[in-house]
Image (cartoon, rainbow, N blue to C red; front, side, top):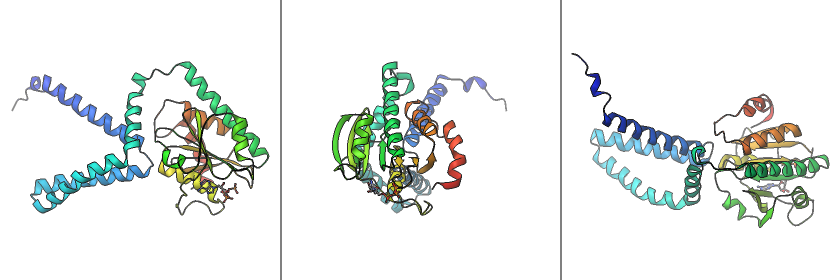
Length: 279
Ligand SMILES: Nc1ncnc2c1ncn2[C@@H]1O[C@H](COP(=O)(O)OP(=O)(O)OP(=O)(O)O)[C@@H](O)[C@H]1O
């Protein structure tokens, strides 16, 4: 039987390909946004429910299908309510995609200046063994953690960051959270990691840094009060005992780069270190 190739290249085929492309683009963006977060586990749960729905529909399992339909209807409303802040951010993120990205050089240099301010403060504190915990919001909002601390809304300067962490002052206990180009809060409480593979030598400050990176895409920089060592937590992992220059490069690559790929070249550089001592 001869295959009619002209049938393959129809307008309908083109529309179908565009349709598939749009769905793939949206799903991959959602998965990328929620990678290494608890929301990703929830998305896996939703995928399982959808698979059960299709199987029960094909196999004619009417009671199962009825129950799954019931769950889908109610969970859709529940998800919108629970993830309202994340959904808002996700839509903003979509609008900020490279095609529409109109970030001027001014904003990029402002970002660079903020990394410099953070690193100046962190270096100062590391030399004097002043414990610090600074979390930087990326795409997923940290509102629930900002709420646990003292709200600030201040310009990010190294002097202010240092001042916050001076021991025995009212704001020094807990984390500073940076959102956009502002200090959003100080003395914030972060979720502690319950990962059993986090080495015992790390106390609650480091566990809090890892914990936040398990719940969100935030990057957190830690100064150890005990040793003055610098560490960065990101995507559920801790990069321990960083040199200042490595920490600065990592922050710049994470915060200034438009590259959303899962593994940056810096991750590869740091993977040697993390094999030894991280979670
Ligand atoms: N859940 C949390 N959220 C934010 N900050 C926290 C949290 N838990 C502890 N911290 C901060 O960490 C401090 C205690 O640090 P701890 O000595 O237990 O940790 P560590 O990882 O051993 O760090 P260090 O090397 O600085 O001693 C607290 O005083 C507080 O400032």
